[in-house]
Every structure is written in C-alpha cells, then in structure tokens.
Image (cartoon, rainbow, N blue to C red; front, side, top):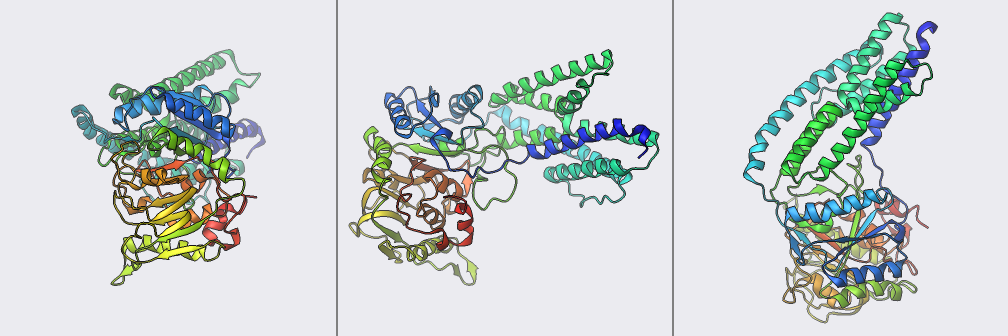
Length: 563
C-alpha cells in the first residue's frame, strides 16, 4: 500500500478488526471452570412465606454468602404458577436485581428456597399472539433473503480486496450467514494490509466495507467502535465531532430503551418495540435473530417446566419455550454458549424442618465425608434390541456403567439387575442410590444414611414437594434423610435425566460441588428437571471414593484441573 494513504486506512482497518473481534466474542461465552463458592450464589425467597427468608438467612450464615444476595419475590404461595407470573414476578425481578447490584458477572448459581414456586404451567397464547405468527414468519423470510444478498456482496468485496479469500459454502441459516459475514470481514481487513491498489480504489473499498459493517451490525456498534476512535482524535473538525457525539447519545439511548423493552417481553407492545429498536440500531443480523427469537419465545407446545430449569436461562432474552433446549453447561457441549447460563439448585422439602436439614447436613457430613454403601437398582434391559438401539436399554447401560465405576472403589455395593424394583428394606446404611422404575410410588428400598445422594428415574417424582398426599420419590427420599435428590415436575422423557455413571462418577471424586455435578451432566434446560440440595454440598470431598484416574477420559477431563 502507498505510504501517502497508509495511516488513515490502517487506523480504519484496526477499528474494523476490533469490531469483528467484538462481534465474534459477543456470541461466545465460556463455561466457568473455577470451583463454585458462596461468593457466586444468589438466594431467592418468597416474601409471602416467612420460613422462606428464615431458611435463606440461615443458609447464608452457614455458608458465608456475602451480604446483599437475597432476592425477596412477591409470588403466590403455590407450587405452580402461570407463565405470566413466572415472567413478571420471578424472572424479571431476579434479572433486574442482578443488574442493579452489578452481580451479572459474579453470580453463577441461583438457590431457590422453600416457598418459591416449583413449576411453571404451559404458556397460553392469546388470539393476537397466534395472529402475530404469520407476519413474523414472513418478516423473517424477507429479512433472511436480504441478508443472503448482502452476505454475497461482502464476500465479493472481500475477494476483490483479498484474492486469496475463499467463501464458505452458501448456506443460508442465520448462524451460517453470521459466520460467512465474519469470515469475509476478516479477509477483507487483512487484504487491505497488503493491498497495492491505488488510493482512490482503496478509499472506495473502505467506504463500501464500512457501509456493509453498519448494515450487518448496526449504527449502535458502528458508533461505539468508530465513534470512540474518532472522538479520541485531537484534529477532528468541530462539525464531525458534534455528529459523532450525537450518534453516541443515540446509541446509548437505544441500548437503554432496548433493555427496558426486552425486560417486558411478556407484553406484546414491548416485543414490537424490541423489534423496531433492533432493526433501527443493531443491524440486520441481530434483527433476523430477534425475529426468530420472538417466534421461539411465543411457541407454546409442551412449555410446562420447572421454575429452576427456566431460571438457568434467566439472562437470555429470547429462546424456544416449546419443549426444551440443550444444556450448554453440560460437559459434552462443544458449541458457543448462547449467553450467561446459571446453575440452579433448590433447598426445599415436604416441610420447613426437612428443608432446614438440607442446610444442616453438609456441616455434619463434609468434615469426615459421607459414609455408607451404594445401591444400584438396574432393570437388566439390553442396550439394543433386534440390532437397534433401545432408549430404555441405553439408560440402563449408564447404571451398569455406574456399577463398573463403583467396583473401583472401597465402597460396599448392592447391584440388582432384575426388572422388579428392590423391595422394602433391601439395604441398610445407603449413601448413594440410583434406580428405576416405580412411577409416583416411593418404595423404601433403602435405609438412607443422613445426607445420602439418591435419585429415582421415573416421570413424575417431583410434581409436588409440599402436598402430604404426594407419593413421589423426591419427597419420599427427603423425608427419609436424603441430602440431595433430583426429579421431574412433569413428564421429562428419559433423555432428561443425568446419566447415572456420569453423575455419580463425578460426585464420588469429591472434586465438584453438587450443583456442578448436576449441571455438568444434566442434558437439558428450560425443561422439567429440578435439583434439590445445597449447591455447595461436597459429600466426598474429605474422603474421595473415586480417583480421577479411575474415571473414563470424558469425565476425567472435567475434574483434571481441580485440586
């Protein structure tokens, strides 16, 4: 490139590179690897249930949770709430509390307490909501077609500036269009650094690139990046300075307005405002994603869920509400995270006294470690039938995998592979239990040692914790002294459960807290599953039952960096 026009364009290119890096980073959030501590907790209570705050305060004192970490919600004294109540009275106050107290980056785990609703009912759409679906689908189609044309244009410009650039295949999904845009921008900017084209050509190419950047990423980001750099110049003409300052003020206001509208996304007018603001200020890529996000948000099929599972996504603005989404905190997740995801655990039980035991148990158990045998109640189902994989057999194989791990420990093991569930009184002094399949009918197969970690794989074991007539396994295990359990508030399907060998394999190393073990192994979020127990509970920390070397590589990699 000619020295006569190098400096100004090098500055522009550096800004573009910084912008591209920012855009890419905005789509990627790494999973926290550091050990979960009390400093990362947010405690959530129902101010209409006095015991809720009492328990949270006791827990905060016991675990040393920092001051200012208790959110007091004004919610009904019921285990189930409507979708509207969840959005307005649970999710919104928590999100705002985190933001207003500058805890967004500090809190990685939410703890819900006795009195906080357990379950969110199906999302019921109004007639107007249904009517909005058609126009949104059409808008997404139009916006995507326009994006395809612009992506092709920027790829052509990148090839013109940098002849070595080879575009990726012309996929038209939004994620693919985003990636194609980023690759073309990077190639174009790098091409400028070695360009020998005349000054007039470079200036024209640079102007086109800036215009395309603004189209894809919006005036707000354009102002943030280019405006900040321009305003730092001491030789900037007064009229240009005023123009950049006005654009910066517009950007700040647009972000504030977008945040306020997004917080009220349960309201139709607010959703329309979100779409308008995004289209006007945040670029075509963000707009297309937002249109798709609003459509996903309004989906309602199979949207009943556990409050705690929804809260793991409380930072996300829009995500599919029908069925479930993959849990991006799971150790098998390989893609970018959709945003800041949170772990969630619940301190709850059939009554206040049992909930309080979940606070007291760690103090009694952790100093010496959990003692007792392991019981695995398999069903002996083959992993495949007739040469085809069998879903029931595949989960049963995780119980056999758990057995194989337990054989590497010093622990006494009872393994049963008969179809019938273990009868009452089959085992004494049980510290860890996993079995299936007695739906909604708790069987006292095991006498649990206080603090045991136990769960039963069946469909409706956590539909209620407080109903005295409920015979599910979650309330039953808690009544019998379990320090932690998990279960579903509605039909979760078998794939929703943590694989038994993964869950207990990690737990018995003592390297991870209960919440980390669960969220690194549970497959789904925005779904039916709930974890009950102190999230910081580490029953095998003082006396590990499994060595990291005993774990399969997929699990060993998770805890390899833990002392």
